[in-house]
Length: 194
Image: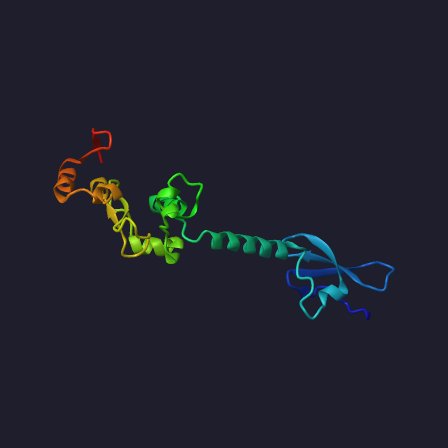
């Protein structure tokens, strides 16, 4: 390798200070990095066509940190995982898809699913909107239907009580009584609050 004086040349963040005395055929240069660190670099690595050595290592650490931060930002898609709506969405997914969930037998076990487009929280949130108040929860209009656009609504406890599978079998005048009072004659013969 031919000797080329690199003193005071700048490569990326490195400024060449002086040549290291050595007895090999390669030339080592002591450089100071913009960050203040001192490092020695082989002349071939300083002059490589692909850019070679550009720093003491601080540039690579910064790039890795940016990549790691970007990955974490990409994983945090909506920042709403602590919201009530997210908890509603997650509970729907669990009872439709997870046989180990307590209520699976009444949902996924009956063939009720959450539609593919609602497996994305943002789509679900845009379709159902925010909960209008604490007294509301998400209700399927058709109890045998899936969680999908057009088959859900925000409903009060009384509205949902009128939409239970057992309730649908009641005569219309009994349904009206339940709606007005909030009570239903239970299987034990006692009045149950709905």
